[in-house]
Length: 445
Ligand code: AMP
Image 1 (cartoon, helix red, strand yellow):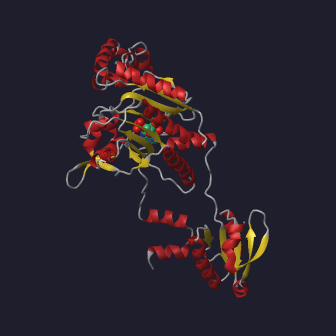
Image 2 (cartoon, protein in one colour):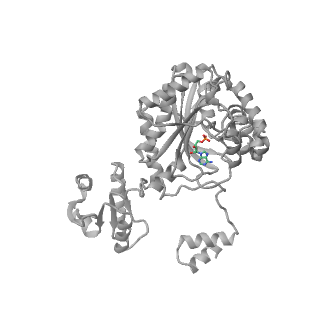
Image 3 (cartoon, rainbow, N blue to C red):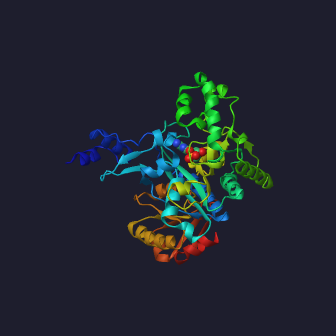
């Protein structure tokens, strides 16, 4: 007798028990990777509700879905996100594949969408591309509440226009998704990070001022002063906040083009009656932004309070080898959105139960029910059956547990008479129907 057969003989058929036993026997303890999560069936309705809202809003705004591979050449990300950003310098999952090519699991969506846009000449097919995506992203960050190593984002990119109307449209889309999902307590922060005309002289000024308070900065900001001085501004460290209280902010040093654009964004937000706050310290962790940068936060989240972020990146397409094409986009975290939905109680809790649970009393009836269920399912009715040879009572219990809307019991006499009782599980009422007419009965109730 094999080990498995022996243990089967000794133990009742409890799959949990088998799983434990199996693990012990082979000394296996295979777990998911730190910072990754299974999305279990109980959570799926929540994901589906959010995905449905996202798709509907994207349709309303006339964005088309694009799906790109989850891994790309490493240079795509180092070129676009920036060598000195946290993402590229310490968070990417990068490895050499068997042909010694450096591959990276995508840490964000914009770079891949732009690569696909350039590679497939989408710009030649229409002057304006409005694209959206949703899917997993990978960053080796320190896992904590709301911060995972594999997480999901949805986002959109508009390529081909420098109109501030699109900056605002891109800010409105995630907020409309949140509104539809009952998430209302969000805040929109905006800033302008300038352009290659006004940013370098401002940066020089900033570095000069930061050097004066160098000793008071956190070690992390001291290091950033060299590599990415703008990021010192969005440090949450008390020492940095205190030391940089009076340093100049980009928004006060914009060139006239950037200043006009920023003013345009603000007045359009007023036109659509969307509240916002200017946060001159908002720089975001990716290097590619020009002009507008924004973030949407929720107080329902803990320290990781950002729900979405984005901005304009007018130079990025060219940087990646395409024709000069202005662009603007956002990315929003799925897990954080779901956390807020759960916290404020707008989350759907359950998948709806089947429309019909077919109880079979003997083998022949079960086979008949199986065939009937196949037909009903092909007509679009959600139907469930018993596959575990359970008793009538146990099948009824299961139908109840699954919250089936109706139950029909099929046995020898029902097959002979061609009629059976269908029970409405909510009201408890029963009525006799023709077995040929089950779909009619389901439709009419
Ligand atoms: P980013 O691409 O860094 O601008 O992030 C956009 C949004 O994605 C954030 O506002 C978060 O909602 C979400 N996000 C970013 N990093 C993570 C992470 N490690 N885990 C979960 N969500 C994340």
